[in-house]
Image (cartoon, rainbow, N blue to C red; front, side):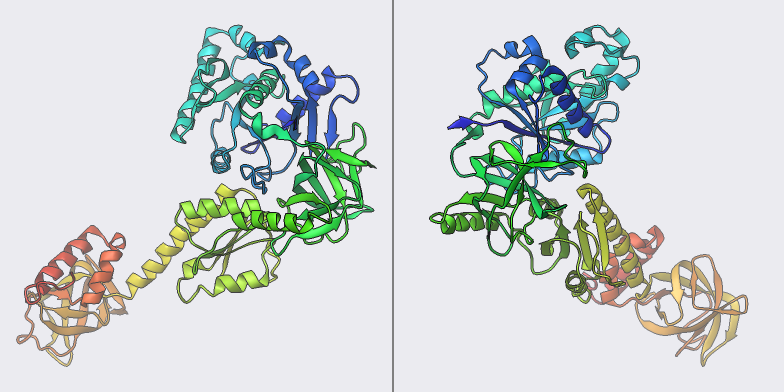
Length: 586
């Protein structure tokens, strides 16, 4: 059994310095090393312990422990892929993460989302409180960041402390205890905050020191791997490579993968068996993200590392799936193990709910979890871009609940080619924004629907038949009406103060023009059916809208759309109705 490198990645809000931190770590390693001491692999940078020692200097000695980890493997991967990939041990690819926060901006929405994902996958992390060089009055200088902090003016020190404890407070609200790394009493209970600058390099050596110390002390068991055994890994990306066709970028975290090995790869349908045609890594000093970079063929890849695989029959492979090397004797057993692993994290669905799509199974799992925490049901969850079938599945909700005719796409495009007015599609590469946009739309859409419903109900109203304004006594009676409260419409039934429904508004006029409705403060001429002035009604009478009991119950659900005055009239109407029926509207 051998201890492998610690797999580490960065995450955080846009423009807070994730890539810059990694670039500075790699740059520091290259400067401190002889040629070739830092290895660029597929989507990863391997920094050996010898280079970490040179960068950290005597600060590593302060850990007072025997260091046995071979180094750090930093993953370059977009978004949250490193946390939402399948991995039986802990459910994620990374062993530890650096959460990068702009110390001047503090926690932003995507930072909170990142923390939720770290919490979901139980991934330990440290915080790089980045951009200290942008703190007002800060003066950068070479050397340990704690020494630089001591050199600042009292005003700058106070400002820095305020910003750090602002982070501490916000993290506490999210359920995490944290402190500046040199003040931590118990690393198992507190998150380390390391002031850094990706521009000047301040705090970079301290990040490496803390990561190394945490790995050595708390992650030793999970870093044990069998280098001589069959390879185990995770698909980082699936991409087209010039001259090779469809290729897989893979992180190998256990064992050794060799050219011509047979591998079993997880799939949503059933495991895929393929034979490795070629293993590749970037040429020395090549920037692996550059499409013009050349790759060189290698005979084998040893954990922990990244490698590009060329193999036939991998067209259906998805990012985030497990990959295992197998022999003819072990293929069936490994296929069963991998299928079980995939089944354990396939997203469960409900009988009713929205449709969700994502680029990887892990991303889908993370999106589903956050939606369920908000009480949102999911009818269909699948990987890939949005299709015609997804549109049809979402539209099927229309009759039951128009607000469920929804498709949420995380890193998923609409390739359906359909414009369907009934189906609302939300797409984003940021989970929090996707859910936030959906919730805001849902609130507005619900309000629009409910306001439409309320317009179909007989509204609460109170009117007075004006004295001296009887224009016709009957067939129909036409009188002047003063709207005391509420809204009346043509067709509104009216009752007297005893609760007896006696008439209905046939039509209305305001200033000699026909109107369909009139609200409080207006005086209108109303034509009333089935009544005669002097018999059923008289000048000065107070009449109320006669609200059916089912309308009254609906108003109780939609009372937020009624004015305080309408609510008061509604109560008056209920009191009148309950004289004959004590449980009316209850």
